[in-house]
Length: 98
Image 1 (cartoon, rainbow, N blue to C red):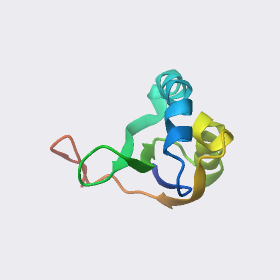
Image 2: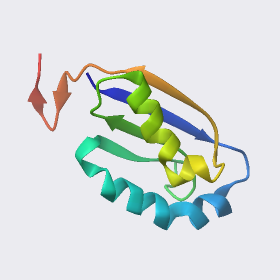
Image 3: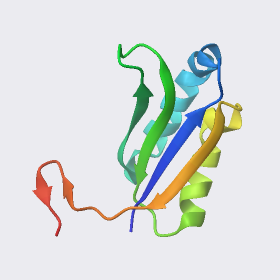
Image 4: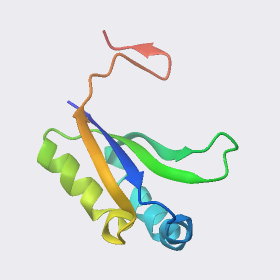
């Protein structure tokens, strides 16, 4: 069953986020088979990121933790904290899984 991972950036780390972005995007591309969805959390203007949301198709919490901890954003010290929650797919891309 998939997991939802929500990360929260440390305050005042926009420059760090930008510095790590290319490596982060490479990591996502390398692991795209695990990703049901992912993306940055943005301010209302859509300009400043404050964290990320990932929905990963893995079987265990340990796998979800390993995935996010291997992300260059995590390894580079961007995240202040994160929440990992088991997720039930009800609707995805307009399709019901209920």
